[in-house]
Image (cartoon, rainbow over all chains, first blue to last red; front, side, top):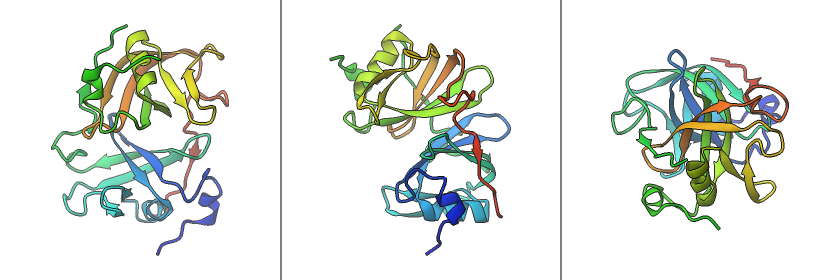
Length: 113
Length: 113
């Protein structure tokens, strides 16, 4: 079991909670997906440079790309002001979405204002 | 009580769950913040064009900017592939973060890879 660096853990609102992680293409600035990290996957992301999540559906660590080859090489990572969300700028190999689309955000909603 | 359009509700994985909403500056593509919406705040966002959230700390609807003047005018909004996260492109009046910073993501973490 990998343990999160205590200096990083101290920055989190709740080190035992899942943290939503926004994934942004480091060049185009397109937002590719949102996934969740626990403390262990955050530590692995910081130490390996490969985006690693906690899969809520499979209840296991998830190295993005381990099965698809679509790795995310992390270029930078930042926490938000209250330490309960983070953003990563990545170089995306292949596509981010399991549907084959480059980004997971591909269902526009109609504004009725 | 505002009710979410049934056609939109049908696109959500769970219309009773809180949905993380990523907020991106429509021009610079900078990600400004992450907040949460329930069905009611999503409907209000779609019909008013002003980003409206559900405050988890205050347990109430939160029209961003109602007290600060820092409204977010929504230009586009999209759901992700599994209907449990969304992104909005906005025109941000003033700053997004309550600290006075333009973005809430201002705590970089050190990559040790």
